[in-house]
Image (cartoon, rainbow, N blue to C red):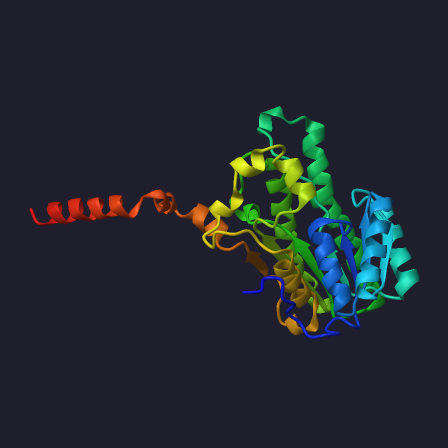
Amino acid sequence: MNLSAKMLRDNALADKVIVVTGGGSGLGKAMTKYFMELGAKVAITSRDLDKLQTTAQELETETNGKCLALQCDVRHYDQVESMLENVLAAYGKVDVLLNNAAGNFISPTERLSANAWDTIIDIVLKGSKNCTLAFGKHWIDKKQTNTNILNIVTTYAWTGSAYVVPSATAKAGVLAMTRSLAVEWAKYGIRTNAIAPGPFPTKGAWDRLLPGDLKDKFDLAKKVPLKRVGDHQELANLAAYLVSDFSAYVNGEVITIDGGEWLQGAGQFNLLEAIPTELWDMLEAMIKSKGNK
């Protein structure tokens, strides 16, 4: 099975202008590359302009597409408005907003400072709000239809998770915003959807979350029923579908792509997976013997 196979036909996004926040590296970069391969014009944003420019040049060379690098701290609404104006000046319009910028770290909550908590909330929730509001207001004012917002959330947005509480809190807010605006803004021709990825290794994020040899001790593939982590192209395929016209009737949906990870963690007895076959045989024999009495 070729996990890195491309899903959509050539030029499937040829008429689209897409803005990807946090597009300079990792999953944002992978999605941006595929959008460009499908013909979209893309603008990538983050706080690190040098990284953005390097990524944009690299992707333009690889895809022969167009990628605009724009410095923007999504925590500040005035910077988001300026970024949007620059996209419009360069491309003439914008069709899709992909809220991908995020921050996270693993820590017992009582060890966090108020500032550390605020940093995650501001990037993930406030940043997504800032971009969503600026782009939504623009589309509504210009009466531009067939636009959409795609938010990157996580499965613990609806379950919660210890040790990443600021992230879980922020992502839950983005999830609520996704579903709420899908109803409220549909009348303006704006679709709003989200993706909840499971483990998709990226060097930067995983080095911050699991430094040193922790990545080896906490093998996330073992938590996935399919016994593997995701390939970046698999996420890019899903994102490309959701921002394309092929998904025109998909609105307010949150699609999980995690190999069944969160379901395995949710089931009360899922830990019984660790019981070897021989022990199951013994347990079955014990149950049968009690039933015959």
